[in-house]
Length: 468
Image 1 (tube, helix red, strand yellow):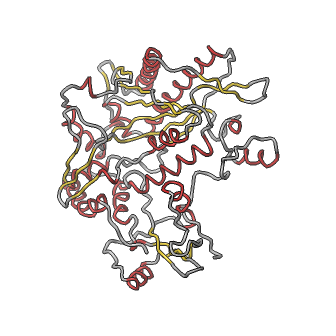
Image 2 (spheres, one colour):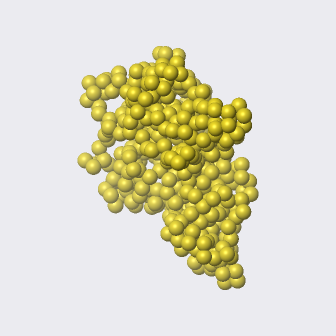
Image 3 (cartoon, one colour):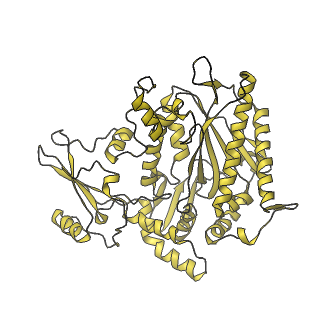
């Protein structure tokens, strides 16, 4: 039997969301509506009064109820954590081949962070420059090893909007197969040319090339002048970014910024930083999954957040330059801080490049399982197409909640805890009146929050068969 359980983040939002919104309105600082919509969802995540699914065991007549999630995109650690594991398993099972994978992390100077936080198109352009430059770097190195001119790369790029202190810090994580592919006349397929380790001189030269191309882009758009970054009516800070600017100013004072601001294994040039030391071996599945989860992780870890009713305490992953490990906020200050982390609707945070793109020629020869419709047709019409035996299905990244929880935690929610038989989804209850009657019958009180009816159908996330 499921019961209502609130997390520290839900208590914080329920306590201070209305007050924070009123204070911002009085100060004439208006955040976009999608920010308030996502924050308003958080108190109802996993709460039975927002709707639930009834799971039934036909063998022993035991049943239990499972609450719906809020499907928040940036702030809910449970929902973002689910998508993190879901996409990480998809990348490992279906997309990234059994080849070495290297991570490239590009951080931006403070002025550019404000611009890309405001302008999604500018962020997309900077990401395109970053990915294309790294791809060209791999192609040039592969040509030195193999004299084939036509070299191709495969990778993906993830935009992270947060730092370890929950500050708005848009930066880019790119995962590339550590090498380049070329067409082999002997085998008639694409062959990987593995490239050697990246030395410091190569990394410095790569960063200088990225910075030069980014500044050419900014100058072309009129965002950089002779005196540095300029402001124009198109790049004025909105309320969301202005709050970031106000929150970041006190954090500029550091005892030794050169020592603590960047990693010793990173190259630094004109405020940009590039790190590319992290690499996962081809057959090390644990390292691959750890790397995929890292670039897709949520901003707020549930076990790092505490709330005593007045103050919010957040434990950072790393120490600050002054030795600080824990950050303390008022409720309103914490809500304003995490409001900055919510991206605009329909803004793509994960993009594929090279041979990983959906319509790339030869993609089916590189990815572990062909999930594109053309590749599926080719698999069905050819018995010679190599399909890994370890691949479970040809499905996309979406997984049922039961399969995901079983694979992540080893817990099978559809196994009856009394008799061990398989349970089935009996029904999904979303009507407020039916929810209240059902919970009153079970002796579970209904919360006073407003019910959110705007959710996707349960068939999308559950093993739900209407015929059962």
